[in-house]
Image 1 (tube, rainbow, N blue to C red):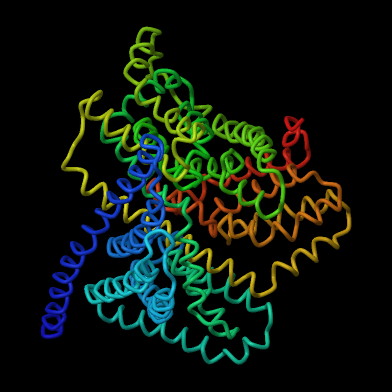
Image 2 (cartoon, rainbow, N blue to C red):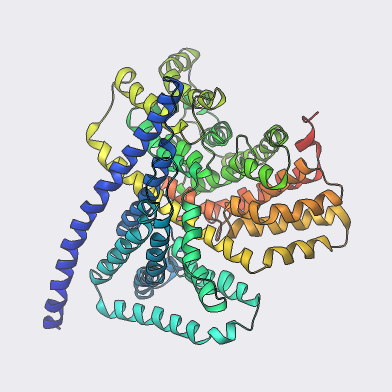
Length: 619
């Protein structure tokens, strides 16, 4: 035993040294890429608005750097063990089983990375024949991020397995993953004859098995998609890498890392403390007061960035520390944050609204007008749950602030409170796009920290930038994997079958609306919002029109239904984004979110039953 331990110790020490070196080699470029994104986008805004000479290459360069940031961030997240995973069942297992499943959670991503590395290299080689329009360089400079990031994640996964304390567990976990892969490959001829039953096997069965076993969500989605396409179709796997690239490279997602960083800046410069002090003086004496502030804050900032993950990243770091200090449980916080993500899906300028209008022909200005009131209806139902949960809180020790104290804290907080208005004004006045606006927020926060609050901790910048990259990589890899899954579902013909089935339902418009709600909740839970809209919008809207349902009314019901699914565990990607943004374990929010999801469904039913809520301000 001693000899075995000694022989095991040497590789572990070497793996530890290599892991440390790799950490520096990846974290420093990832941090610099965050800085580069801020500089490039801010330069684009300044040049266009101040100099009146747009930089035609700024968006293109930002897009190239962004894919590198996403992939290197995913490497950092894997090295730190920060990819989102569900450990509810794992946590209930015995220590031995839990240790084994923790190793499986490294072995399964290793299997996915081995599957994807070849197609990723092929994809990057194919992109060499495409020249970017502005910079006029080969697109392989951008696409190379995929194979290099995948290769680095492979190396990280191998090093983590070597560093594992128990080699027997490591070998057993690798053997289990290899055996399951072998069984699936052996059954390939059977799968080819099963038709759409394979959708249940791979996208329900395999995803559920891996997610509940604690395998990170992004890798669970990726394994199911690659397995389905490789074993049941003749689709080249390089196409899947292309879909992942498409999902991770959406220009609006550029705002995710920047709003994550902005949230950290607001906290570090003291702006958050000033805002919270003022808000607490207003509502601190009310039971659940800051929870109401969270609902209202998400309504106000929603749509500023166009990304729900970015909206949550702008709000959570500001409110959560004080809410925790006042006794709120982390699980309840992340549950309410996820619920507000669903509640605000229709608030303009929402990217989902714009996408829906573009693929269905519904007026985008009508959608923007119709989207405000449904969000308020769902806010009221959420606030009812907040009131119920906090109705018996003991606030005897909380003193109500005087008017003088509130006024003093308001004066201190005004520069911080002005930030959301500065950001929204920049979008409305056309100074910056929804993608660029976060850079204006960052510049404003830096100046406020340096000149007004006189608090700027330079030594914290590097860890903040690395944290931003890791968190962004974890979120974006989930979105990329979900986009490839959405594409696979489209290719199966499932979307067309669903539309035909729903069009033939008895019961007329009411039954069609009820079926649409159920269908889009399910679709929202397994697809990211935009892919689901692109897939099913053109199919479902003609049926709704034929039944006499107003386009804007149906749009609101569809978007809110999808939002409920998107933010509902165990499959909702948005829920894991909320957990990632707030750095709270997904298990903690599982129970508290049930009440909030029920409230959202009640609000959704009200919006569906009363068309005026969506259409009352259109005329």
